[in-house]
Image: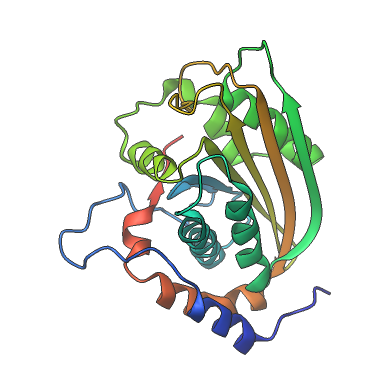
Length: 258
């Protein structure tokens, strides 16, 4: 059985988090199609500057609550690092993972890699697919929404609302940083595999796109985390997280059509 954090402590932690200003209640910018979390075939969503895939076995309420938790972690990390230099990305990751763990995600697996890509030309999405497949192991042979999304990115139009949302949020992070999450169920336990890759480019003025174009980066920093959280813990954290996020939810989560 997974150890459960004190709900009051988790709620207090969420309440005191410093986030970017909420969007105005009027004139909200649409993020695109509202996610269909009830789809029996699973779903893929853009959550601000990250992409997440849910298998069909993940209940709709859990998909929504987990999407909100990922959004909270990203916004808190953005706020914590907004005054830092573009190449000082460690505080961003420290805050992102700390938020997940404080609201109840139990760290089960951790791997950090530095891949020397000097002299190599590569597509970012191909690297992401390889890393996610390695992290999921046999589970990757299942219908992974996020892997299917990455494989189909060559057909994606950059004019799609979800991609515009994702691209805008990535630009705000002051770094070439790409995040993926794959979510599945193991009995009553939610399993989250999170992968984040930041790119040490040759030129700080050159931004590496996720769709189209190869990179000549020197180093890829890959951070993989495997988390578990039981349904009760996630449900306990859901209300304070949703209250904290407020209008951010309406403008920061969009469905992805694969």
